[in-house]
Length: 370
Image 1 (tube, rainbow, N blue to C red):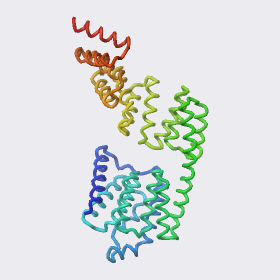
Image 2: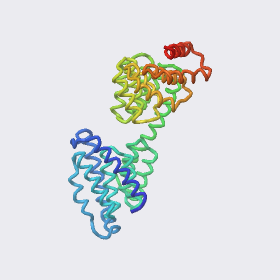
Image 3: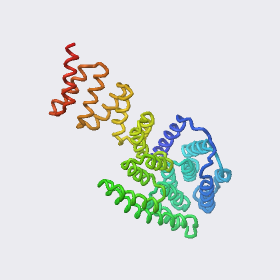
């Protein structure tokens, strides 16, 4: 088996294991049912058009998998997982590899794993670069990821191979339109961000609203728009926009980060902690989540947890003297006087001038004597 095949299969195996760990139920896919049926029908059309080419490339026999595809009009998530495992086994055994990767990509696509699906379709193309359906399906993955330029290239390649491919033609038109819209969205987002940095809230709000009108419910636009209302103190409107962003993309970390900060301001510490934790789990570059979760843990008097969070943040931001002082406070609350003294003296050695620091140093000296 080729090395790239092995790498992809390992990535998919890891993803499958993650799904198993979450104990996903085999719930019927009810939302977006029309889109799923439409996508499956397009996929089947593309495969059937190229059946003769498959027969020639694979040795004259039509693979049995074609017969089972017609039954996939509405299937459960569990069935998609089973299909993924079947196709991975076929690839390992060297059976109908181009088609197996294509069906693998198809199943991953319906489960919303567009990155893994696109890699699967790329492998189909690497084995069999003359099939228009593979490029069309790859373009659909890029389209769902808002990678408009790559989507356009994939759809155009499908049309180059098959000029009368109606689905690819329509998809190319859609991708071109979205690309044009994206340029307009970028313009209004950039203006909105500039006004936001200048604290010109009303102007920023107008720009983000314009971007929403052009580009639909894009999570980035919704969160930025919500941040304007957050700054203006209009919590209800900010919350609505953050929740809409999460609904559009449940894995969009900035939405959870902003919602966590909103909950923190509302003194809903449990909700704040959960959302900040989710933001950091989705994107570990959200370092401020660590510090804010540390603040919440400190309020809960869970000083060991607060210490762990503050130390994690301080390792990433060693110049944050305030965090080091909070680390000292955690040690102090835990009765570890020498550790607290060391943290506070480290700040004094940095020539940090703070009445609060002086008070803490005096306190630890008194505690040490007593």
